[in-house]
Picture 1 (tube, helix red, strand yellow):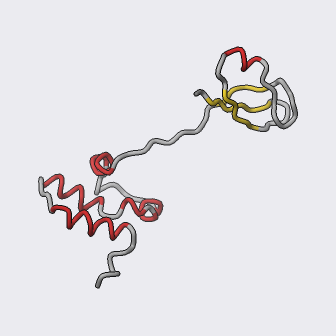
Picture 2 (cartoon, helix red, strand yellow; picture 1 turned 90 degrees about the vertical axis):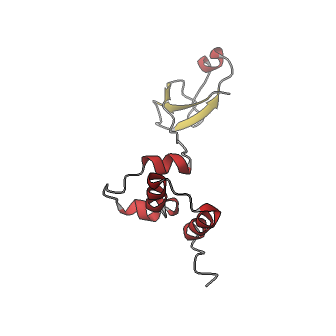
Length: 110
């Protein structure tokens, strides 16, 4: 179902609307001020990547900002990248240890 976002030219408010038929868009008015002067705007979106995609795109030599270290998913990317490059599979125990590190639970069992 197409859900479009609109901005009112009168009050500058934004809103979303489910449009099932093109004719429905002609009768659309601003939910804030009831003006008919609305325009469709581009909605924001996000792209989700698998761990395999993240490792493949990871460049260990590239400079990293503070946001890189604030994201728990980045823990172990260097190790995963090197293991892939070397063709080494350390098995499920390595994956389990890496997951514990990402969840800050690595020191609980020691």
